[in-house]
Length: 181
Image (cartoon, rainbow, N blue to C red; front, side, top):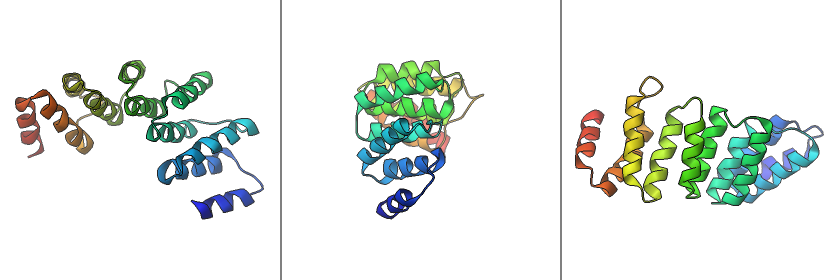
């Protein structure tokens, strides 16, 4: 990231795409606080953030378990009218799940007009990690019933067994094993 940042600092024009790439780099490899700092620079420079900026920012906030900062960014998302965007919504679900704010995560999930496997796969481990494995299994069952929008994928099949174990749901584990085979 050091080399990328040096190149960025030498650029005369820094559009939102270039700034997003730097935020993404920091959100992926760190230091995470630099993603937050870059976002602040974007906001104060007058270059508007876009639907690609927010998922990177929310990822950094989630990785830092910084729910307070995440809520601030969520407010910016709402002001920009991107709260119903699928990618931004998925990032919000993951943020709140990682920050153990599962009720807020569920509210964002329920309000998304469209869901994909990332939406479902963020809720399932979120419930499991927050001590609600039965709720995780209920989300999984809802996913199966809503199969018109998406089916379980590899990530689902990785995140559901811990919920089964925690909830002592042997029959679901056996079904998943059969499904995989």
